[in-house]
Image (cartoon, rainbow, N blue to C red; front, side):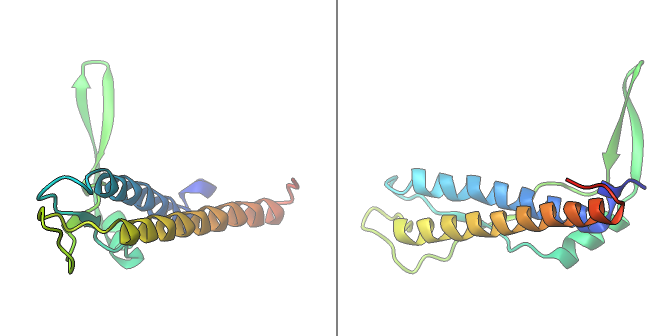
Length: 135
């Protein structure tokens, strides 16, 4: 097992992917804030426990796509579940997006992503130090 295959790195990588996917969903909400009848979406809250059970319990199999090509397929779905947002404020056009709320979510998402990347970098640095490799 390689160092980057450790569960802590897999979990942090998955968390960063979730934040990237959420950033895209939130950007769609902001972009469609003036569209009549648009219903905002958000991703289901990320859970390390749920992802850990999905990652460890799914079988990995190979399949032939071309006679000389092989690929692997992991049993679980790598996409994240999205859900409709509960909108308390609806405009006369029927749109439930509040730009202030969306921008707060974008900022929070960005800060959480930066925290995950910082933790990932510090974990790599600790492992390098433990192995006696500096810099």
